[in-house]
Length: 83
Image (cartoon, rainbow, N blue to C red; front, side):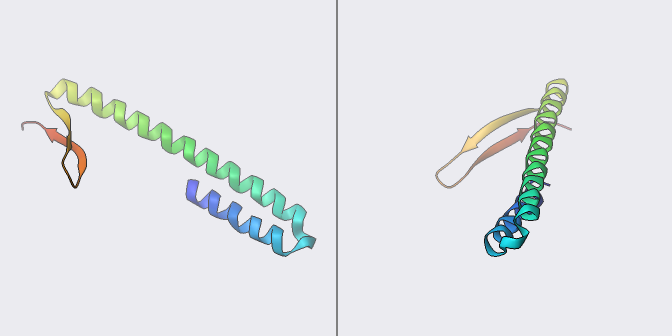
């Protein structure tokens, strides 16, 4: 949703600049695209936080842990646990 909304707004901005007769419609499309982008970003952030909390709660109960890792060429997270 985020990328779709921002792409829609960008297309409307181009139309606004090229076609003066359609500026009112293009302005509405820019606003709509921006709203879609903002809502998409908020939903994505909400799901990211919810997922992180659920993973954190699940890891604490099972004796599994995450640890940060980094070296000269990469960085990430390591997941330790037992079956």
